[in-house]
Length: 180
Image 1 (cartoon, rainbow, N blue to C red):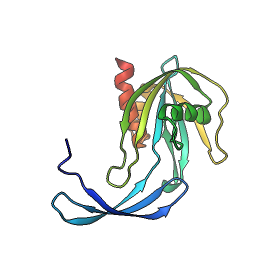
Image 2 (cartoon, rainbow, N blue to C red):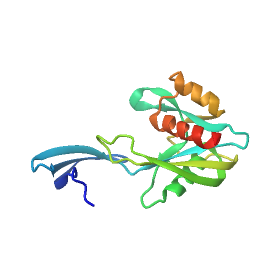
Image 3 (cartoon, one colour):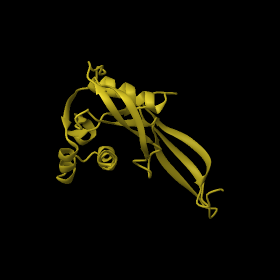
Image 4 (spheres, rainbow, N blue to C red):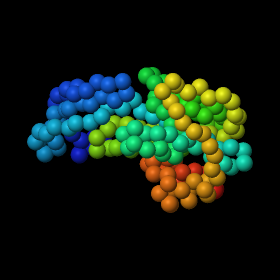
């Protein structure tokens, strides 16, 4: 069944082509027949991992985010490489950023964080059976890895100390999945 609200692309133009993000400007036909423009970010997609240690604590990162000029508490996450399966991305990012590997992986949900101006999709996985090892961070990645209980993490959300949207949403999922 077709979507009666769907817009039809008539033309597209690349406005910016960067290492990570690309910006397109499209001309579209609206359902009512009018034409208008749409500008949006083309994103390769990402994966967020909820890493759960055997004692129930979660593995977090504290990382400086340049656009906002401050450090944020986040769950491990990273972009999907071309033609890479999201699960493989999650496994790679968990190891690269934290040094952990996991025996069990559970797909949780997909998030669309910026539907008004980006096509980004974030795949969320729960990882259990963690085993510590050495991280394999990229040269341009500087972060601190630490653990919090789910209760401590949720308190930080409620106090406004964890504000990263993907992390907040994933923690609410973790609260439901780990309390079941």
